[in-house]
Amino acid sequence: MKKMFSIIRERLNAGEALVLVTVTASSGATPRGPGARMLVGKEGRLYGTIGGGAVEYRSEQIALQVLENRTSEKQDFSLTRDDVQNLGMICGGDVHVYFQYIPEGDTCTAKLSAEALRLLNAGDALWLVSNIGKSGELSLYTKKYGLYGAEVSDWVFTQLPRQPKVLQNRDETYCVEQINGSGRVYIFGCGHVSQELEPVLSHVGFRCVVMDDRPEFAKREYFPTAEEVKLIDFTKIDESVSINEDDYVCIMTRGHGFDTVVQAQVLRHKPCYVGVIGSKKKAAGVRQILKEEYGLTEEELNIVTTPIGIDIDAETPAEIAVSIAGQMIQVRARLIKN
Image (tube, rainbow, N blue to C red; front, side, top):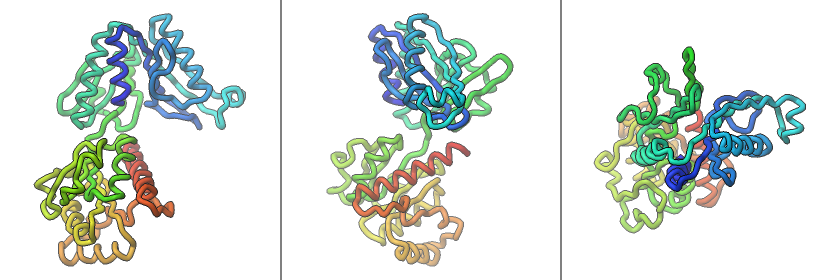
């Protein structure tokens, strides 16, 4: 989303008109679900995708027509059995798409894009609200700062969804999407696996804080895309970070002893995900220590995933990083749907 808002701001400031194409609803085996977005300019698609293939191609052509007509519109794609073959799809389904015209010189949307970038960087939970019952006016909402942008009816804020959703009440229709969660990924240990893992997680939208107690490892040059790189004391992690229930934790320090000490502290905060690197044999031993020496309960220990990652027979640090990232994407998706 940062890239999309950056392009919107740059293009509007340069005097160009744009069309923001958004999937507002879908059913059946369509390529992308609600919330999928594509930004189109006079030369065609600039950023994003609503699924690729012929459906996206047709939407791009409609967006170019919207640029000429200078007005927003809706379009429904009903992928019947005949359409499936014509559109190059594997299965059928329905897709509802909203084409929002953003005129050149739209200073309100340019300023909203700048504010969106600020809020995304701040790391607060952020919702994007589009009034698709009118002209597609955009607004931003955070629980901390409230509403920014076009006016939105109060009833919308009583049912903010985690996943993209169309909300309707009488003659009002909004497409609401949480585009930034408040959770971070805290990676304890800056070794080889962490150096492979952080860029993968950052690339798929996780905000990573990487930590070690060794100054020769806790270096920004090893983690250029991380939100933060910290030199900390593993025995006093609360002095350096504040972990909550929206956060993810990956523990991969240089030894079992530090892994155990970090786990004992982390589990008290009940993050949504705790993954610990190591074998099943090691995990059983650590679990026993955490129960006997630290007094952790079975309920507290049951949130730990160890060995960390999806079982794909990974061996190298890069392969292990892919297995961990896949697991965390899966966890995030389940949280969004709940």
